[in-house]
Amino acid sequence: MRISEKIIRVGLIVMIALSFYFSYMIWLNPTGFNNASTETDTGVNPSVQTYKQKSDLFLPLYLTWNDEEDIKETNSEAVTREIQEVINEATISDLTLRTYGEEQAFSKAQEVDQGISLNYYTTFYLNDYEKTFDKELSLEDESETEDFPFSRIQFDLEENTIQFVDFTHQRVVRGKIDWDKSQVKHLLADNPREWTAMRTDQERTSNQYYTQDSIKLKKYSYYSSTQSQSLFREAFFNNPKNVKINDESVDTYYYEGGQNMTVLQDQQQVKFETTTDGSDETDLAMLSADYIIRLGNNFGTIRYFDQQDKHLDYRVFVEGYPVFSTGGQGVISVAFSESGQTGSREMTISASLNAIQVPIPSETEIELPSSLSVKNDLIAAGADPESLQQIIVGYQWGEIKDAPLVDLTPAWYVNYDSSWISYDALMTKLAETEGN
Image (cartoon, rainbow, N blue to C red):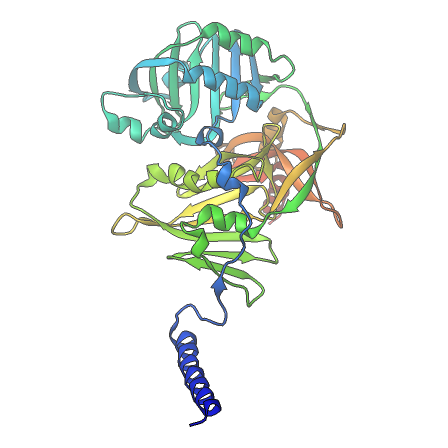
């Protein structure tokens, strides 16, 4: 047989073998060979090197100072962090759980002449606070620590006491604190321009204080950018190097080991889905935080903002205030399913690809009416006083057409019937309800 014939015969055998191989890959591979390939983006994800600390994510959101007859508040992250650092060095002891059957007695337990409070807009579990800030907060019954939700930490500067306040069930966990009180007083006095004068409403029906005068806040503009999809792939997947990608359609799909992620190109949204190990509802903040911290500093300041049942929101903060939008920008939402027979849960993380990056200097100020007048206007418009849970300042995200810029405008936001909505939008909604 000629050499050329031998070469042709070997070539035919190789081609037939390749034909069988590719047929197998096309028909038997469940992921679809033609439409999927291993992700080859080798860009280094900066969040891998710069994980956020949970102590940053779960830092209390604002500080209240009761100074005899004066009540002041600040959203300064720097001051709140410095106070928390003093607490980190303190010794907390003799914690006991107290439940108040009457609302008057519960309110009386929170009265202080000289004291401060660190506050959240939602509940946080005592056990999670203990883990986050590496504090020993033990009660005689450890189960009481694990499932105790609170939204305020109150300190009496005269009695040297600390108490974690649970408004929902009218309970407090109260104890003694041994700390550098002189350092605390110095930090309070050294913050003259950050304080806002506050007052209670006459009915004292709310857990919050209200601004007694109108306030002026700066309007900001930021350069915005679109985050790389690889940022989320590296942060969320257990084995990001093995992730496969399907980009044959308008949207892009990533998947590996039972985890999947969809990038909705038109909405500039990312949706990641996975299954978590056995857990109960007191674990959800920590479970979700394990993923959020991996995004590092790519979205600026992200903080724990809200939890309703099994849904948690982490928001971008600017100058100590949360950012709100109508298109999903500025918030990372985490939703959990009910637990299965093994205790596992489905977890979904939703986030925007768009992020603010570099601020543009501006001297423009916006004047907002007092929050007490906002509350009164809402009630006059037909709002249910029992559904008015909180009124806070937030920054409203507004994109500038044909420019990579975002305007952030201060506005009042209301937690109404367990949902956050702008004051203007709620007034419009109430007017429509009245008209029907």
